[in-house]
Each structure stands twice: as structure tokens, then as C-alpha cells.
Length: 111
Length: 114
Image (cartoon, rainbow over the protein chains, first blue to last red):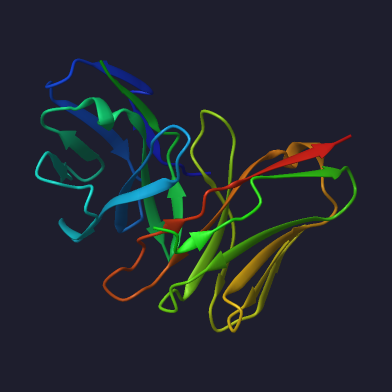
């Protein structure tokens, strides 16, 4: 069964460094998303992406964040200058007919 | 932001019995609801969904009920199995320009005892 994949599974970085989280959505899906879950908190929406542009973003998704679909398969989330509070699980998702399928997540640890 | 609430942090059920997980929402623009199951160190796994034009949707052992007037939905698992032990999240979306943007509840930890 097709699935969303994410790399790396765990990323450790120093505060102020740039990180890129990568995702390969399910191939026939048209909508792509990033969510995050800070330890002990809810899963929170960050951004949705459709037709090569952002369709909606949350207040969390400030100028430090960007998304890109550099080719036909990958979907990336870039954090330009990481902060301690960016430490979280980051989930990529893709959808068809309203059902979103999530990847296994990338655990980002900012030191 | 408490638009989607799961008021029970945990639920413990005997194998073979029914598990009922509850979810309340406040945003009347929500028109599509989903339940996800999550194991530690994994992403949420889609279980079942329901559109606001329906009041019930069934898929095998899983049934979701929607009460729009009460802004309440529930997930029934019958019969419960030990492998169902996980965190269950309720999520909702509003459609339109917010298509696909899911708002999650806090989750309910379900433990099914053999």
C-alpha cells in the first residue's frame, strides 16, 4: 500500500541553524501538508500546499518557515534559523478526497 | 484553541467489549470529521471519516456517529482488541479555502486489556 515517507527520522541541530525536512507524498495525491506536535501537546497544522503554492498557513508558519516542491515527488519544509521552541515531531501528510495520510514524522531536536 | 476537544485523556476496556471514544467541537464551519490512531514514534494512521451530511459511517469494527446539533461525534470499536491500544485523535476540517486543514483534539489513550 502506498505511504508517505519522511527523512530523516531524527534531526539534531544547533539553535540558529537551518534545517530541511523532506517528505515524499503518495504519488497521485494533489494536496500536501505539514503538521507538528510538540511533546505533550496537540498535533498542529502548519501549512497546506496545492498546485505548487501555499493554500493556507497557520500563525505558527512565520517567515522562518518555507515549503517547496522541488521536483515531482519531494515536498520539503525549511526552517531558516531554528529556535529551541521548534523542537517537535514534524509530520508531512498528503490527501485525496479529504482523507489525509501521514508520514512517520521527523523528530527535530534543537539544542 | 479548543475548537476540537476530547475530554477523556484515557479509556480502559476489556478485550471483546465496546470502546467508545468521544469528541466535541465548537466551530460550526467544520463539515468533515476524521479519526486517527497513533502509536508511539509513528505518524497518525487514518481510521474512518464522516461528512456532515451523514450521521453514521461504518467500516468493519469501527463506526463513527455524528450529532451535529450537539456538535459531538463518537468512535465505536466493536469488539475491542489488544492491538487497538493506541492514542486516538479526532480531527475536523472546514472545507472551502481551508480544505484539508485539520484541527486535532488532544487525543485519548485507549488501553484494551486481554
